[in-house]
Image 1 (tube, rainbow, N blue to C red):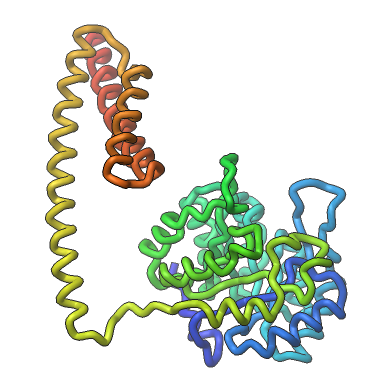
Image 2: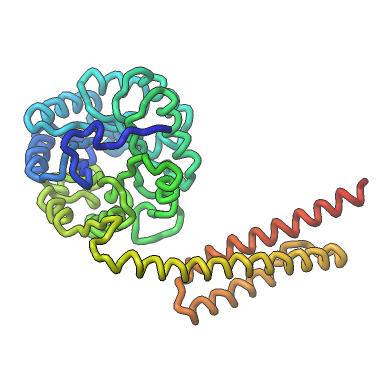
Length: 365
């Protein structure tokens, strides 16, 4: 992928890029009232609205369909805002292009399906319109990258990734788990790819939207897509997560925007000193992991001799409980310790399993 920077295709861009508008287009009046209020917010450059709404279950509001595209044209004419809409198939693409939509976005339920993504990418071959791709509903970085690559392979170089969180069975205070490490890894792999955050779908509740927006700015995202309705209480979809234009303006004014550099001449020296400490500690951690793996190999050899299975649930649970207590004593988050030792134990188990398989192969020969 070789994406073009946002500043190259959005004139007079300021940071962050803000996209706002209702979850769903409901009627022309709703669109215009909301858009005219958003026009007064300096950072808002793009108006969004869902025309086709893929719902989890039927018999709920699934969008007004193609008639909403004419409303988007009116919004663009009367406010000067760029417009964006979600498309889920080639027919949607054709209709959106016919109504002069400026930017298309691919929803999470579409980006999870390579067949659907390829259909849309094929329909856009040679068009050159900007495309924003939301992360798939499941936490799969490769699938997200694959969707972006399909558009890049069709000649789309105005690409944006949208982080909207991931579905999970676990009950949390978020609608969709942020799993920030996934978009951060995407940013590391593709540093020139613009990434924006959809705090509305992560939060699920308007009271959490500002917190998620701030986190996105803290990890240096390029922008925000915030669901905004002139009166969320009467919204036909996702009413709980939408904010008013006035509240959006407050959120944007409250945000603290970090910079990669400091004007304090002592800052770099202090940061280098602390980073050197981190480097030394990480070197010690790597050495300790190497020593641990050598011991794991010894345990594997003993299990082979004793004809004992690699996975021993009782020992594993006791080990996890002990590490969790150590972490608690050290005032470290339980989830951090669980994830860390989950990776360490899985690697140890893989090592012992590989050793046993090699031993079996040796006996057969």
